[in-house]
Length: 74
Image 1 (cartoon, helix red, strand yellow):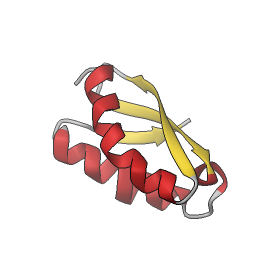
Image 2 (cartoon, helix red, strand yellow; image 1 turned 180 degrees about the vertical axis):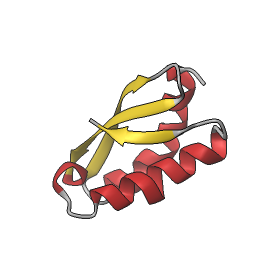
Image 3 (cartoon, helix red, strand yellow; image 1 turned 45 degrees about the horizontal axis):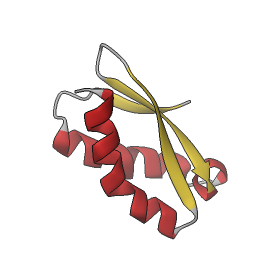
Image 4 (cartoon, one colour; image 1 turned 90 degrees about the vertical axis):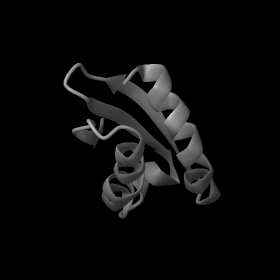
């Protein structure tokens, strides 16, 4: 799992976030398979952002990267 491959996977998720006025920025992919992202726009201040992170972004990335441990907002 490289930063480039995660960025490509995030590009598939972005249209859904952008439809609600938000976006996601990839910050880091750690050696222990944790993806760190920054939620932007409406997603950054939304009370449902934690659900978006775990039920949306993390779930989709785990389909592509089964060895992914978690997705964390920074």
